Length: 224
Image 1: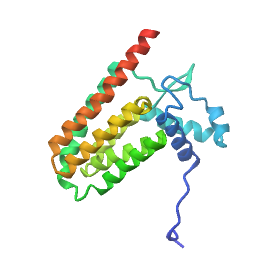
Image 2: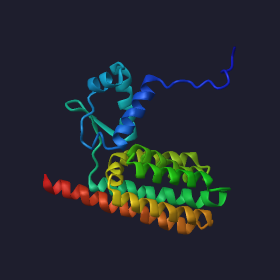
Image 3: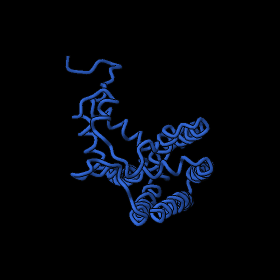
């Protein structure tokens, strides 16, 4: 037998399972920027050895979500306001190109609309992990329609780097309401094949998040 049986789903490796769990903990803010990620407690909590935990942490380090030092071990990556602004500025440039290419190529916005419904449903249920997952589906469903996988990969790296901060933004109900309204406006522009309006709306969408997050970081630095 050389082919997989119909319906067979290969289970994730222990490393993939640990990586998914750590990403979820970062996305929801359970692990916050600057917080240590202890290998032994994570391994015990997930019922695995320390090897897949260590390998998953190396992936997070490569993605920019974790940092390592010999004395502290792994911690959730901390960004200062300047680094955060740089990430969002690069996103602005790359995402604008993806949207301009993608909008004329989209034959339907049904998948994007479904993702937005899931964002709103998760928000109403207080499910921050569901919000994060559906939010990604919406944005990357649009970017991936560009047919430019290398560009999308670069955008994904920047999203991964800023995930610990995005969780702070979506945790505020007022921000979630704004996000939902902004998403609907973007969807309407995309459905109307108005790429430039979609780009402008996404610029505003990022700016609102960045303004809030940088203010929080600056206030936190002042407190210290």
